[in-house]
Each structure stands twice: as structure tokens, then as C-alpha cells.
Length: 419
Image (cartoon, rainbow, N blue to C red; front, side):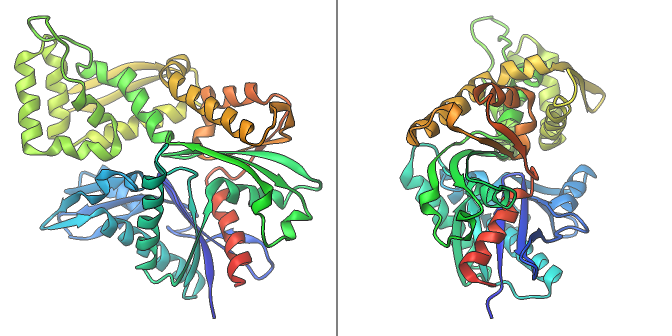
């Protein structure tokens, strides 16, 4: 007998969902009693063990020797996918790393249910790669291959925002046009969907998808932009060389602000180049702190602290940011207004993509009945405020921010596979 589930493999967090005997979808516990698991792996050098999720983050924060990998979904469809990552004595390809993570999710889901899960509906963003249909198709092929290799004999895909709509549809009493806004860790997806109690019983919902669009902007991009605008200047970004003729190179600061590029700075040659920059820099102390931070391999921890500050700014107007590096501290003030300024271009691209979605469906903003927000980045005031202003007449619907996609994928798996 086939046993199905819905897999929401997110840039930041992942879930597995399954429909219970009573027909209601639920998320499976993946880490203790937690229904989500951070999409993170830590390859321990000391115990030669691979840790996952919160356990991986805990190992890393404790200072254990090893390698942290996060935002691995972001490499799908890019040139980085074919790169090898040295972890101890072995070089792993990213398809190996994806497979290891999916296999762990599957094993935990099977432990929670006592069933062998062999069919799955996998969520996918509207665009893995912006404006490149060939790379986008390749990204889905790469993910499907990684999933099949772990023992899923039957694999289907569904757009993540459509899955969120399926979850929401259980609540509606009449037909509504809903704009699903799914702002995840790596991508932002928008879908206009027609929902109703009657349509919920249909097997084929393709005609109810009025328009979809997406853009490769998400929470990790917001972290990078906040880091570049508020933290990297404290490490020398924007400063000049001693002769005043040029600015210091920008590339190392971009690498330090980007989760999946931080490890590049830990290369011996990259560190030699950074040390040589100290001699050229006018603001020597700042660049020295940068080099110390890299030598201590604190890059991911720094961006994690930036992410925490970003989240705090959802409820506070200002945050005093302080991060220790040996006997020094990186200190700066972060305000809600500064975050909005740092994100202005990205938020503008989100607005353009929403406008594109409305044009595809030949709808005005007033034609949208419900605005359904999912994904943690919808909590950022600069984003939430613009969405509210764009669609002032729409009913604001807050779903389970981290779980609605997985719940919808579980419903879709039940519809397709029947078990």
C-alpha cells in the first residue's frame, strides 16, 4: 500500500505533512516535539557525525570543530550545484548533501508514523532561478533526483503558494479570489487562486490558478542587505586605501554577508588576501576585526545575529547590535527605518512581481478578496506595510507562517495518491 506525505523543503525550515484518518492534515514531529526542522546540516570533524536542524545549529554555536551548511536549497539550478564541498577527508557534491538531508527528513517522518513513506508531493517555488526557464527546469530535476534516490518511488511537485491556498480553502464559505504571498528564506512567490468549498472537491484545480509569479528574493537576502548596510561598514566596507585612490574590495564583504558564500573566506588563500588588505587599509582596526572574525570562523554566527536583529525589528523600532570578536566588539544601531531603507529595492521588486501577477489575471487590486501571508519574511514591517498599502481592501489572512505549505502539500498528496 502507498503511504504519501507532503514535503516542504524550505531554504530556512522544512516540514513533512500527512493527512490523518479523519481527513485533516497535520505536520509530523521532526525534531523532538518540533514540527519544523531548520534546513541546516553540521558535519562534525571531531565525532565524524552529521547533525541536522537545531542540533546542527547547537553544535556550531558550541564551537565544535566542523562545517555548517545552510540555505542549501539556494544552490539548485545554479553553477554552485556542481561544486564540491570538502568535509573532513571527503568531498561531497551538493546533490549528495541534498540527498542526506531529504533522507533524514524521510527517516524521521517514518519514525513518527510507523509507516514506510513512498509517495510525496514536494513543494517548489514559482521560480527557482529568476527569468531563466532552462535553469529553473534543471533545479526541479536536481531536486526530484535527490528525492527519488532516498526511496520515494512516486514524486509530484506543487507550487508552494498553491499549497498554502489549499490549506486556507478549508476555512472559506464562499468563492473568493486569494493572493497567496509566500515570502520564504530564499524566494518570494505570488499566486492568484480561486477558492471555494465546491472547488475544494475537484481533482483538477489547474483552472483555479489564475496567475503565478515569483522572484528570487527572501529572508536570507534581507539578512544580507541588513548586514551590508549596518554591519559591514564596521568592518571596513566603504573605507579607502591609505593613498585614498580607491575603496577596499567589496567582494569579501558580500561573501561574509551571504550564508552559502561565507565558507569561501575560510580558504587559506582568501585569508592571505584579507591579511594583505590590512596593510593597504586606512581604517586598519576595522579590517583587523574582519580578519579576526574570519580566522575564528564566526561568519555564520555573525549573520545569525543579524537575522535575530531583523526579527527583533518586527516588534521594536531599534536594536542595539553587538557582536564579540576576540577582545573586540562590532557595535551598531539598527532601526526599523534603516531596515526599510536597506530593503527598499528588494521590496520594490516584490511590488513589481505582485503587479505582474495581477496583470496576468487581468485583475485590479480591488479584485482580490483575500491576502494570505505565509513565510516568516511577511512579518518584516517594511514588507507587511507595503502589502497592506497595495491591497487595502483585501482581507488579511495570517496562516501558520511556517506550516501552511506543508499542510497544503499533505492535502495534495492525499488527493493524488489517495493514502
